[in-house]
Length: 292
Image (cartoon, rainbow, N blue to C red; front, side, top):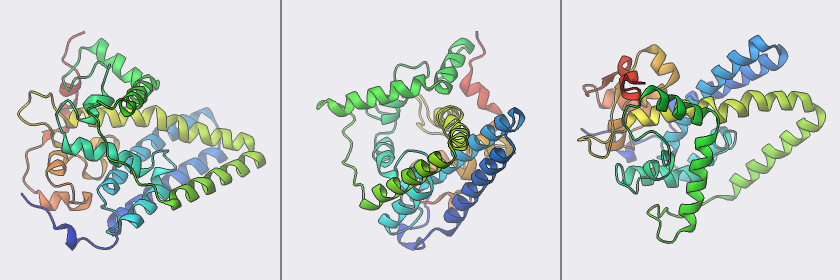
């Protein structure tokens, strides 16, 4: 199988830019409407919607990790950090170090996902009994697993014998400029309308560190396989609900993405029209082994 050549890519990937702007507009609209009509019955649904759109933005951000937003790498990172990386608190240069290492070491004990993301947690790319699955998901929802991952990341960075061995990240000055501008605007807003900013933080930050993290964790888990499996990544065939919640923007073509990471998301179905995919309705069989 082959995908479109990198040098045939447009200067800007129009479908990706458009998708990012649409997702940002949806988030702005949901936040604005909820702040204007602040009730318990609007806040909870808004947080659920925002979590799914944050996850969708992370999928588009994932394309930017592979420089599939713009051919000019600096412009690629500038646009991605301004629209996704900084609002979602992960500069693309930081995540790129981990994700490209994941591609290069897929399935090995030096794979950052095995070394960091699931370390000291129940998941080992195999279905879990219900009590362990609940413990895993609650750990993701309550930030406990995030703290574990960050702690391991810090330790691995300090260990000269670490298997992680990440390349150095290059942060351009505009990243810090945007960070200062965003922080300044948020501080000015907080001084003028502290209650509104507190509510905004509730709507944006709480889903980001709870529901969004849990959705991403489920997706990452079901896309990969135990180290002794013949295939180390899987593709899925989701229905409309699966596309909305777990596999937006053709991230379900995950095996194909690992083979051809320079194929942008919107070209995947045409580039790989007849691939083997797991039915989305079998998701629970991958998560739960049917036992207590």
